[in-house]
Length: 439
Ligand code: PLP
Image (cartoon, rainbow, N blue to C red; front, side, top):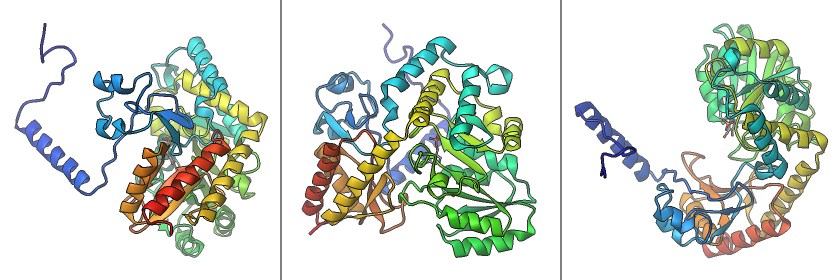
């Protein structure tokens, strides 16, 4: 029997360079812990949904046995031991509850069986199947755009678009609180960069005036901002874009599928579907939650991205099962807006009950409901205490949000029952009183 040196045992690289690297990394990790910004990962032993089972959280398929067997080495055993087995989940982007929808799962299984595990290829070599073309057509139809292109993620879609579209002759104007992937995508391009204050139309106008000297101007904004649950003032942005001859790009990751009367997104909600030129969004949140992202917009732009966009050209094709999930999710949404409306009603229930209880909820009418607490420690202990009561919510503090604006972010899903929502509000009220967030 081989001990220690058997297959699968980690081997530490030898040599002074490797030792130096290890010391540097350990010190950096210590700094992260010291700064209180360490992100730990709770291990879930069930499907994504409103009710979860945490690994090590008590009886269950994997539970303590899984931990004892070392199946979940990253699970914080101490924390998990005291937790209830069944957890009410309020922190996924599973806005429509489609991540574990039986028809979505069935569609994935069928696509897996018919089209295989994956393509082992990028799209332009031998990685395009009929289901990829069908999904692109469906996405374009859903958003009422000319064409669409799939990526492995919306992070990739954002990484690929600016560099392919903009040159040093052009300008991009970006909201300062845009998602990290937009910021990174803009970094990769050679256009002139302007950063305007969060949703500040005066500042955007001043920057657009300055940017008149460039060939083309592109205003880039999240449609809905994930930390605050606030919605970009797209009407005003589009008016300014018209006035200063600019294009508008929106990232709809936290809007696609559920904002607007038919769930088309922020542009539908605010009546500017014909004024927004480019939409990037994800298949990894409301649209089944598996993975994948896309750009949809004018056909020549999509054609150009297929030729030039690096994350598209140099990365594997989306796996058939993932395509199957998203395609079915879109079918469900194209058939009816009932799921989106159910989510909106639950959001309204949570927001109004929490406000009546004395909490301040940031944003308006969005299923991202940040419970504003201010103090970082308060947010952390309240989130922990909520989990002790079986309710999974996450506290955010600096540097993820500005100093003094710590909060617990609650995300509502169509598959939460009214009782789930009420239980969450009751727990918040108890925990808020206990820790002094409420009188
Ligand atoms: N854009 C926004 C606003 C997001 O919230 C996210 C995901 O967190 C992304 C882009 C990246 O999406 P994906 O998970 O598909 O890479």
